[in-house]
Length: 361
View (cartoon, rainbow, N blue to C red):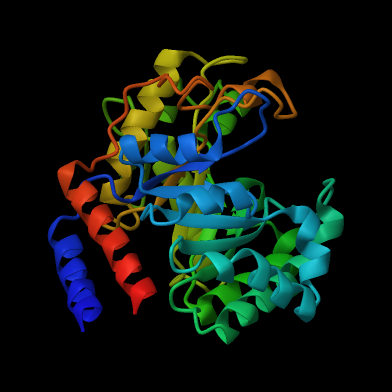
């Protein structure tokens, strides 16, 4: 009875003290040989009031350190695991090994089945055939554990699957990938699960700096830069996300929600990179996502910033190693406010007390 009353209290308390910025999380990448240990990282999240995390694989040290932290987590399935999870028994085993042992002391919010698989003309294209069966099998494994309403199973795409992005109202997926994406978004709509999308205005900007201005890309345009069906677009992020909403509508799934599973700006290594530009983009993004987009105003956008640290072993061009919000020594590169405060500390303390009561019962 005491545990039930405490749970009811927690629900009322959390509802009454929801701090600003609660929609924003941070991706925890681990491709570095100089990064803090997992417990130090979770402590850093908590001390900065970062309440959501994206993991790119079910790292056992991170998941152990997350126990009782009250941080909500997106756990990734690495692309290399997709063929195994396309088999139902493989998916069941993966969930039983990597998810169930940590629930509910780790607040797993999503499972992301693969990341940025591109079904045509890409090194990941051979994996496209496995994404839908892996998605369905992991969903079924979660459902068989009775957790489908608590843990949502989705996939993360990038914006290369959009064929038409301007104007945003004309957004449409590429015709050559519809065979791949349509069944996936159909399943997500049936399962009432959002699509995960990695959205980077930085890459759009450097791909077309003649037509896309830096202020438009980092939220500093003083007035709308583009108009579309009476909607003014003052920043590129809104235009990109609204083009994705339109693409979903044009594919018959306009009711599907979108979680921005990555977004960020590098501080060095390429065109338009600087600490100032990155700080401007990130701080403006944190403030902006609570208000929605011109197409969906007032609907907060759950967003994950990429990434917690500069990762010195991340492959690719130099910019890839400069997306961190923190240096490996845990010093912040930018002064960002994620919300929180004492209300967050109390909720976390009470959550831990609830887990202790459940264990003792």
